[in-house]
Amino acid sequence: MNVDRDTVRSRSTDAVFERGVNYRDEGRIQQLDRFDDLVTASVSGSSLYDVTVEFGGRSIDTRCTCPYDGGGDCKHVVAVLLDIAANPPQDESERVEAVIDDVSADDLRGFVRDALAEHAELREQFLAQFGDDHRSVEEYREEIAQLFEQHADPGVYDAIDFSRFFEIAEQYRDRERYLAAATVYRAVFEEIDEKYNWIDGAYDHYAKTIQTALDGYADCVLATDPTPEEFDTYAGVLEARATAEPRINDEQFWRALDDLEERYE
Image (cartoon, rainbow, N blue to C red; front, top):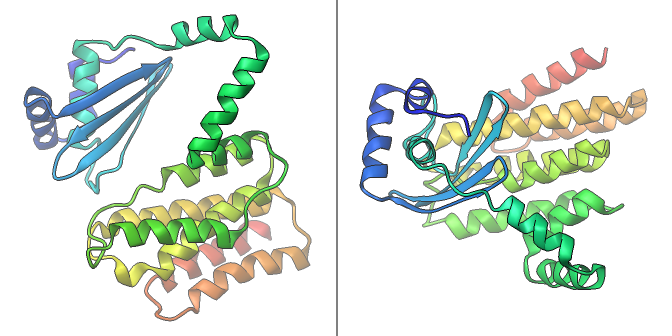
């Protein structure tokens, strides 16, 4: 894992870097695991935040569930990167691969089935990767609505993590199932827009999440090479959100619609 202290410093502001140093020194990293080039960790702050670090050649992709909206990595990511630089974690992938080689197909199938039965999120990712059908916009929206209800106290003050939905969409895109991916993106931007009056903090996080979902939706719509009639249906989804009351994010949806129409022409 090619990362050192100077690299970590270059990825954040000076103030955030110092906070990240303090977080690591204070022992706020509660769990850190590595599987091949993927590191996951939990870091305690005002809440417990999940950090993901993925190494790809010379690049480092980082994600954190905290509401940080400033430049560069947040202090939780900095703390984790510093820990990786100082003490590279043991890679569990080789041990797992060796065990897989020794497990019979029936035993492996039984284990996968039990894991999928117990973990709904893993089951959804499995179906996105290997299944032929997909869930509806309404079903995804219901899941997202439940996330808002879980975080409401009474308003939503922190940044809800929607990465699972984007990962599912990416799995569909990798299989060139663009309409299935568009369904996920649509559910994300529709439900966040619907619940925007619940939000009382981390506004940049939600605006960026809506934009990411809009960009993904547009890319997938265009990838299907739609007929004019089909395009009107897909574009109508954006127009419906732009004109929905209350019009909080209407300008963002109008811009997305204009961009989609320009790219289609």
